[in-house]
Length: 210
Ligand SMILES: Cc1cc2nc3c(=O)[nH]c(=O)nc-3n(C[C@H](O)[C@H](O)[C@H](O)COP(=O)(O)OP(=O)(O)OC[C@H]3O[C@@H](n4cnc5c(N)ncnc54)[C@H](O)[C@@H]3O)c2cc1C
Image 1 (tube, rainbow, N blue to C red):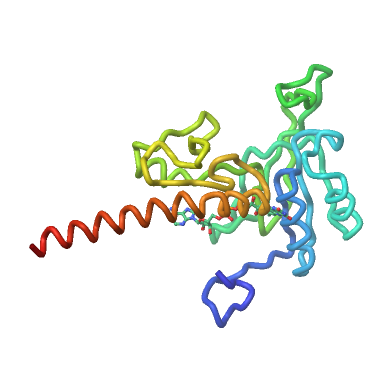
Image 2: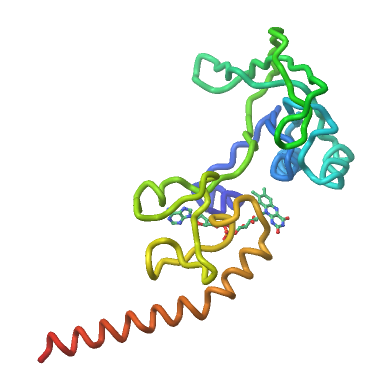
């Protein structure tokens, strides 16, 4: 959307003085470092402990090296706004870790009932990705996996004949190279389907013309 070329393009990029990024995956590290480079003070707040952060170790190391601060065992419960409706702080509940592990292998956490506010004029929520629900809500014939990704067959065709999908929409959080691979794989079945449909259309037009 070329927000970085504001005001030439009218997608404003709001740069906070103090940014809190919620989450501790690779996206959180990217967002934190970008905000930092734009001149904001940045804190990453994570509800688990340091050892359970999901970002790659290198990403965490680089974020720390660049000046991003980390706060652990903080679970956001409320955004606090000012009189203009802009965020001025986030209320967090302090968490503590149990010995028991959850399904993802992280130590389970429980609330302590103790709350603290962290000042923030910008908040980035980076707590995971899932496919945009608009498509599945609009196209109700599309079969969806329990995690929200689209069901596809080995040709990457969805449950709607002639409609294909690839990339993050079929596997969740993944990589550019996998999405590009899907594009390459799709090239021929899609082209064939389009060609077939165009032939059918041609045939229809011929039929109507007669
Ligand atoms: C912060 C961040 C950092 C990342 N860093 C890396 C990295 O360093 N290396 C790496 O390999 N991967 C990285 N990834 C992952 C990578 O970006 C994705 O795996 C990849 O972009 C998936 O490609 P895609 O085409 O499936 O989806 P996307 O790139 O998300 O493209 C989907 C497109 O569909 C559009 N769209 C959505 N809904 C609709 C609709 N209803 N109608 C029309 N258009 C619609 C969206 O606007 C978007 O342009 C990163 C991801 C994030 C979020």
